[in-house]
Amino acid sequence: MNFGEALPTFVITLREGVEAALVVGIVLACLKKSGQSYLSPWVFSGVGIGLIASAFIGVLFGWTIQILSSSNQPFAPVMELLLEAIFGVIAIVMLSWMLIWMTKQARFMKAEVEGAVSAVLTQTTHAGWGIFSLVLIAVLREGFETVLFIFAKFQQGIIPAIGALGGILSAAGIGALLFKWGVRINMRLFFKYMGVLLLLIVAGLVVSTLGLFDSAMATLSQTNRESAELCFYYERFTKIHSCILGPMVWNTSKLLPQEQFPGLLLSALFGYTDKLYFVQAIAYCIFLITVGGIYLQILDGRVFFSFKKTQAIK
Image (cartoon, rainbow, N blue to C red):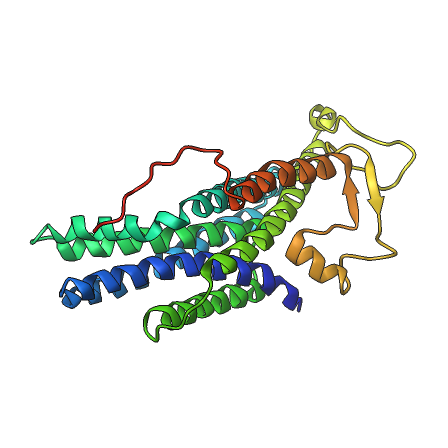
């Protein structure tokens, strides 16, 4: 059992879970401040349903992949690999965007949530449902991103699920420390370092996702002669080659194999591979330069996107 697979899911769910916990805590504080704490059960219902819905999405994804893996159709293995690769692309886009967007919007989160709660509380007949929807969307959004990452990176398994559960519990603990016991935590510093770690994890996902596309094309090219030309790159004089990823950049399988510690841990956490190809290396660098550069510049106070700022409610 590779317990290193629990670390990436722990990091993802911890960061995403803390974001959701902040929303929940702000909503509960607003309800208490306005003297409408009787609506608190709607908040906890939103959290519970959001977690259940996220788990259901995970089960649905797993069920779909399992059907493809057990199918006798000739193109089923290709479809399985392509589906996993598509999950990877969606996870990369969503996690990257949320990393940048949340970093930029963090300072306005409290005002935005308070404004949304105040607007909901003006609806005397449907205030409970409004609070429920607000919390449900926040939890489901973070949960969906986590589920996508798990299935893009690991497809299935109990170890990633344990890591995700640990992240959720830790996020809930941080939320309780902040809002129930009033413990002061430097959340800016927390999100800063968690963001850097998340950036490296997603960069590794870029490498593994490209590997899935390469495997899918290689599998498809072997199904019939008409598809053989899909592998436009092929080295005749080497046993190890890629289909669409170009020449090999390094082969560290003897020095640092990814099936053994610490390569196993690096592979699970940062997408390390002992056989790296040219396209993967270029994509990894481009991702870090673009997304990483934007993230670090935002941390430095520079603006790349124009977000609508919400004024705090007096």
